Image (cartoon, rainbow, N blue to C red):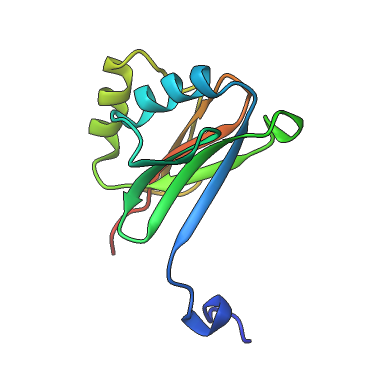
Length: 124
């Protein structure tokens, strides 16, 4: 595999990004406020899954021994509107990063300390 080629030769079909948490109900409430909707589905009593877009999913899973170490970043269109909508639901970002011209990432921390970044990359 050379630089820039997709992993698995581009044969990956879905991405499920997991976030370990300690308390299901506390985390469920927090993530519903962050995402602005209930989960897309519950695979079992310890997990909740949200669809980010087609073939892209993010989920919480009760794994107290691993909670607090996750780092996820979701790039989106309409970042400013997304931040405002999240704030209207009572959550406010903790950090604001601008690593390059036109690039912005705001960081939220869930009750366990998992990092959820919401960002924007300028279109060419």
